[in-house]
Amino acid sequence: MQTAKKIKIGIAGIAALGLAAIVMAVLFMAGSMGGTRNDEADMPREYEYGTATASNGMELHYLRTRPSNVEPLTVRNNVSAAPYYGINGGFFYEDALLSVAVVNDEPVHGESGHYGSGGSNAKYARGTLVWDGAVDRLSVQIVRQAREIEVTDRTNFWAQGGISMSLGRDEDWQRQATEEAAPLLDQASLRSAAVYDAEGNLYLVVSATRGTLAAFREAIVERIGEGNLADGIFLDGDGSSQLRSREKKLAGDGRLVVQMLRLIR
Image (tube, rainbow, N blue to C red; front, side, top):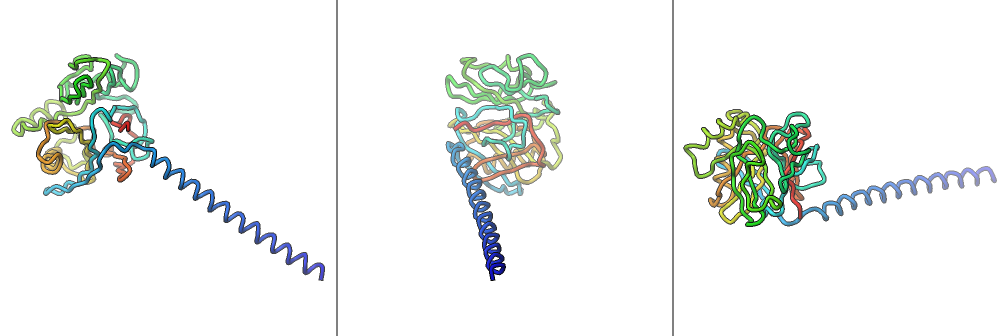
């Protein structure tokens, strides 16, 4: 009888331990999930997410915000997995940044004058999106070096290099993009861009479908900014076309990128 009681107590103890382990696992998972939710809750909110499909089939996803809420940032990660909201930035090779990416005249990826720091558009003068913080104005300037950028106050601006979109100059844009050595111009690829409207709102745009540069530009003109776009630049594309927001994640082909345009608030 005593042996039987001991066996029953032992079985009950094992069952209790098993139940406790299950409860602890559930609590741990709930805590982890809660932490994820809290992390997401603490992410930026001063933006509007949208998606649209153009008549040519290009599926666009965009983040609309003010340029004061954006900055170029070194990330060395896939944007969809990075601890920031935003989209991919300029061109790169291995760990070298090949596009202008500066904040207040300081390159984001190394010391000024060093190769791959973000202080220049490598090899070519290229369309560079510039936010002049002193007057809250966006422009596209074609420069080779960041020091060529014209702004009101060099301690209050950011700039992101890419390829000129030449919005409003439909007959000239492709010649300009070719002159700036736009990669994969006629190849069906994922695409990304930063464009702005006449009120100075900035749209960070990534495609979820592949298309030529012309098809992507056509889709943006048709579906972004309600016909009120002023200008913008193409950013790095293909597998580097990536986005993260509360509403959507696009990982491109999963690769890491050197730099992104991130939302601050």
